[in-house]
Image (cartoon, rainbow, N blue to C red; front, top):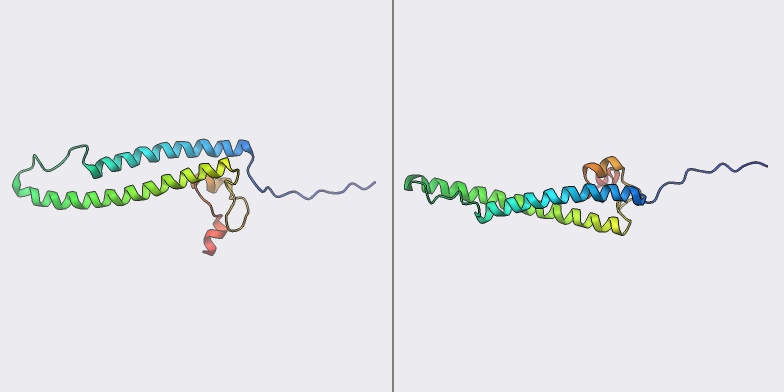
Length: 131
């Protein structure tokens, strides 16, 4: 009797163990991202008072311009950080749904190496390059 040679089956999703590994990685990144976001928010809100109150009047105008620019930069960084947090939270939902790591364009698994570098990725490199 001839034995039928089985074709290797392409994985359609990561195993629960693999998903748990990614979940731990994302939770670590999420904790750090939230800390960074809080730090940026405190810079914007001036809750750590490093203001111009104790500066002599001649430097006050220069200080205010510089502070305004720094506040604008911090606002932009905070917005990017907030979006990053949202993306990480969405990745956690995909883990719970067991759809994490599947390219939303090709339907193929995104390589682990890419997910370790960009844990919120929803596109494979192949799909991203086609855009």
